[in-house]
Image (cartoon, rainbow, N blue to C red; front, side, top):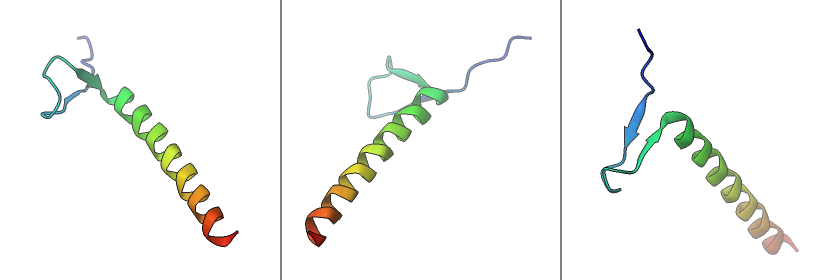
Amino acid sequence: MTKKKAVYTDKSVSSRQVKTYAQLKRDRKIENKKKIKNHNKNRAKIYS
């Protein structure tokens, strides 16, 4: 038996754009990094 990759479709995105769970996880990681970066930048502005 071959293992099927877990596939997740976002209804708001066209049905052709199907991402694997790993890709989603990586995207979320990158997004979170950006958020943290911006958050730290904003804090630096406030306290400078």
